[in-house]
Structures are given as structure tokens and as C-alpha cells.
Length: 185
Image (cartoon, rainbow, N blue to C red; front, side, top):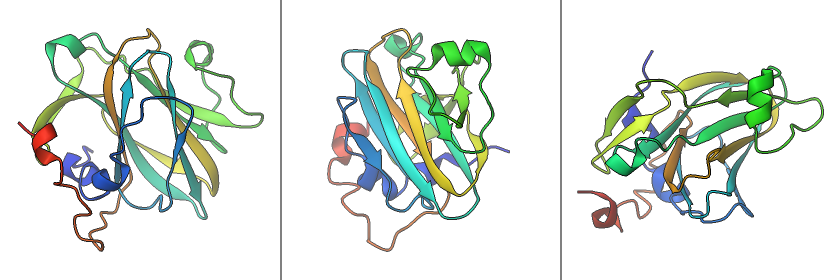
């Protein structure tokens, strides 16, 4: 089943749209039950971006990694891994590609971003066409999880991690359109 892309890039985009240019800090998600789009920029190719999620109950959550569909991004294939309790042990190939060792007792879903050809989607709010890993829904147990995003080839560029389910418009549009002209065509 294909998840609606607009769901991933709605209001929480504004809350999670703080571009990160280094791997020293993590996005700590206060409400992991709503939808987010986390934007990051690989400026050295060595960054490891982290998103921290804590669940108080089991929850199914879709994840998707996107890069803008531009000629310079055709070979840009960042990867992501969801790391935490109850996830499977990665294959030997996946373990070798991870940017660091898994914490003891934890597993990971690793997306190698190796579909050929990659799917593309049109995102209507920011009016962009993205290459996508395609959404994957994971059943997460109660506990703490991290999402790691890295560029295994050291390539540079911008990436968006879309994740979550519920849209939250309770705070209005929270500045979503404040810099819209910067991103929309």
C-alpha cells in the first residue's frame, strides 16, 4: 500500500524543518505519533544524523527517505536505519554498511536505498519531485528507537526523512509557509 506523501510533509514539516548541518545533535521527537519531515544536509559527507523516538506502546510507523529529483542527485543514495528493540538482526552486508555498531541487544531495519530504478513522487506543498526509497511500515515495540541517516559514499546533498502517521494542525500552520518561496518553485 502506498502511503500518501502529503501526510508526511504537512504541519510537522515546519516543526522538524530545522536543517541540520552536522551529526553532533539529534532531533528528539516529543510526539512520535504525529507526522514529520526531517530535513538534513550532507555538507561533508561524513555526517550521521539521528532522530530519537520513544514509544510507550507498540506502534506501526512508516518511514521514507527522499532526495530531490535533480540531475545532480541521480547517484546520491543516502541510507537510513531504524535501530531499537525487537527489530531483526541485519544481514552481514547491512551490518558492514552501518555507520556504527548496533547497541547491545538491539536490531535494525536497514534501507540500502538500492532500488533500480528509484520511485519518484510529487510533493504538493513544497512543489517538488523527489526520488524515494518508498515507504516502509515497521511495527515498533514500546521503547527507545533511533533513526540513523548517512551517506555511505560520502556524497553531498539534501535529504528528507518522512515518518509518522497522524497530522497535527492544532497549532495552526506553525510557520510552515514562512519560507515557502525558498523551497517551492
